[in-house]
Image 1 (cartoon, helix red, strand yellow):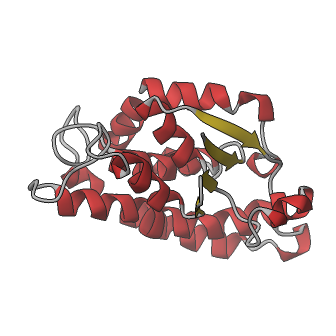
Image 2: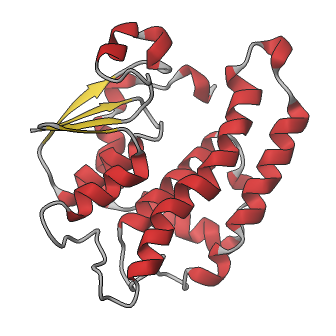
Length: 213
C-alpha cells in the first residue's frame, strides 16, 4: 500500500493528483501546515519536515516532481508517462522539472514574504519581484501548449501535473490574474480533469490551510 503524507494544496498535491489519475490504492495522511512545527512527531517519518513524503515499502521519496515520475513509470508505461524512444521524452522530463524548479520556486518566495513570515518580516518588494519572475517564466507556455491541448506528446501526462500544481499555487497567491488567455484556458482544462477533482475531494477533510489566507 502506498502512503502519502500530505498538506492541503501543498507541493504534495502533485503526488495526490498522480495517484488519482492512475487509479492507485493509497493511504492518505493529512497533516497541518507546516507539519514540522504543527505536528513535530512527523519528523520521525521525515527528518526534513517537508511535504510530500511518499512511502512505498522501503522506498521513501520527498521530491514532488520525482514522485510523479516514479508513480508514472514504476510499473512500466502508464497514462502519465512518456517512454525513452518517444519523440517527446525529453520534453516530458523537462516539463516535470520546469513545473517545480522554474515555476514553483519563485512562488515560494512570494508565499514566504506575504503569508508565512511574521508581519514585521514581510517584504512586499521581494514578493512583487518574485511574482514578476514567475509570470515572466510562465510566458513560455504560450508557445508550448496548443489550443485545447497539453504540454507534450499530444496527451495529458505527468508533466501537466507538475506544471498544473504551479498554476494552482499561483491562484492561491493571487497571481492567476496575470495569466495569459492561453495559460488561463490550460488551467481551466487541468481543473476539469477527473484526477484533479478527486484529489481535491480527497484532501477536503483537512480544510483550508492557514497559509492560504
